[in-house]
Length: 197
Image (cartoon, rainbow, N blue to C red; front, side):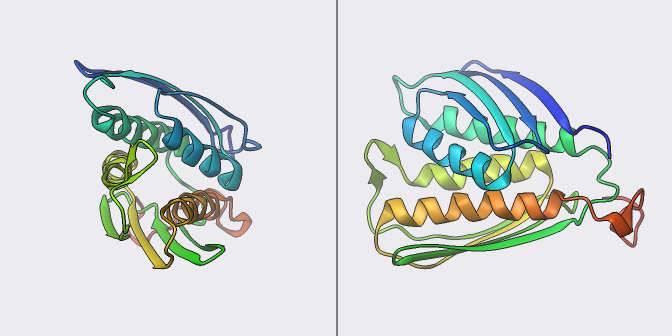
């Protein structure tokens, strides 16, 4: 399998974002987004997914973090899709359960070539520090639309919003890692009955 890296730049009226990924990395992470809690979550994705992430973003944070968070999801999705290439030889499906104290979340992903998401995460409060919890959905929606994956996210238990969010992002990183791992028995083969994903 060739080196799976990508660099994507996205510029809109609201945001300017650069994302570099290495799907076969060690979990190194360099983040400068202006959204500290999202950076904390992306660091978990990198560490648990063993994906090297380099993300810089400038956005209209004087309004709120919505455009920045959504556009980071979009750009990360584009970078992951580009780095995954034709997806020959990958496992394709990935899943993970991650606990943190009272919280437990499950993430299941399929690098299907079709965007789809089921998001079942309920928070008892509207924000974690300065971060609006509604933006987690926007991040993942942006990601799946551009990575073209099917993603199921379920929080199974939890009271602490920080713990819930962290279990979701850690499980997401681990599920991505499993799905994009090389399957030696599928070398050069598309993991699909259609011959394409």
